[in-house]
Amino acid sequence: MARKGLDFDTKLEYFGFYVVVVLLLVYSFTPAIWLVLTSLKTTPQIIKLPIQYIPNPLTFQQYFQVFERAPFGIFIINSIIVSLSSMALTVFIATLASYALARLRVKHKQFWLTAFLLISTYPLIALMVPLFKTFRELGLLNTYPALILPYSVFSMPISIWILTTFFRTIPSDLEDAALIDGCSRIGSLTRVIFPLSAPGVATASMISFVNSWNEFTLAFSLMSEETRYTLPVGVTLLRDQFTIPWGMIAAGVTITIIPLVLLIVFYQKSLISGLTAGSVKG
Image (cartoon, rainbow, N blue to C red; front, side, top):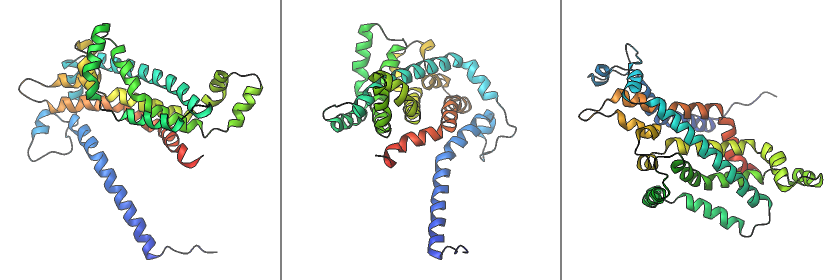
């Protein structure tokens, strides 16, 4: 049978949908595109009137000046160490907690999951002073643990929620078979549940990594030594006393967001699968 064409109302609905999608894409990506274009301009091009939208000639001068003005290589290393360590600690603890909530007989499971989400809404700024005093007494200021520990705690609730939802989608028969074959609970978790929950683990890992990579308030408050700054704090060093070098700042911010863009591009399937697992399965 020949496929009937869409009626006018359906075509109009599709047209409206795509218009909305295009508008949302333009709204979302225009600031990022403008940021990258600004980083590829010389200072005279940036301040030129009327506005020069496309850099001509295109130059990477601002990126070279960023590394000359501040030790951005050290900032990148600090951000990588802090973000990866926080991600690993978050996923490790969240996996154990999520497995208990998804598989073991724990009273008031839904209450605990809701409590975790409520905790994640607590404003970070309200905890900054207590954290500063605590880490000062422990002698942890200007050290990696001063950032890794709180970052892990702040990413824990959403990671537990995601992993618990994902663990529930895995058939319990697989785990029962492993237990019958002699596996312990930890063995069934590491050999059966964990490998099958790769999309959920990837989603929790990415959320934890992005949260740690982008965080500014704690990194600025708990680190006073320049050699311990992360990238978001390091960008603030690019500002002059009397002028604002927009080109260098744009280049510094672009350097900061490039790893996140690459991460999401390469792992977007796992991210989408992990976030939507609980909505389509029991």
